[in-house]
Image (cartoon, rainbow, N blue to C red; front, side):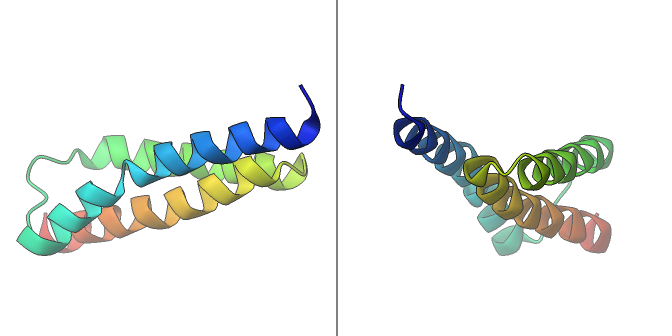
Length: 86
């Protein structure tokens, strides 16, 4: 597989997994309710995503970097709501 095809595969995977968080962010934003969201889970998830972001930067892997940068922002938004409204 060529490197450009591999990057396309990575970007598509990143868009899909990152976009999966948008409905959750929207729901929390709209309802201001985080009752069903586990603080421990989102803390661990956010740290893991931050580490994947660091890996993507250090490995010069644009798909990994881009997807995890956006996912980290979305996860931090949910964490912020959890801390504020939870």
